[in-house]
Amino acid sequence: MERQERFGECLQRMLNENGMSASEAARLVGFRSRNSIFRILSGETSAEVDARFLAKLKETLGEVWPTESWRTLENALD
Image (cartoon, rainbow, N blue to C red; front, side, top):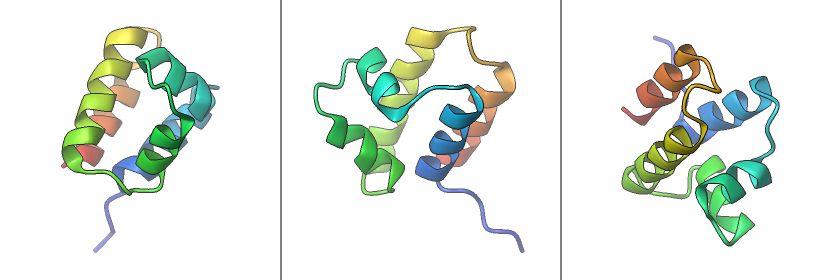
């Protein structure tokens, strides 16, 4: 059985695929501390924090990223 990708791993991959740095993503969603995004990427945050970050990122980027990227990230939250 294949292991599902953790949200942080998936987010890092989506950032890379869409040509965006973690710091840039943090700025877009209004994170003041870069440490917050790196905690998400390393899997040190709760599912609730991950979901809030994803909602803010999606609200900010809207249709800039492909629908499949959003779907992949949402699936990683499960």
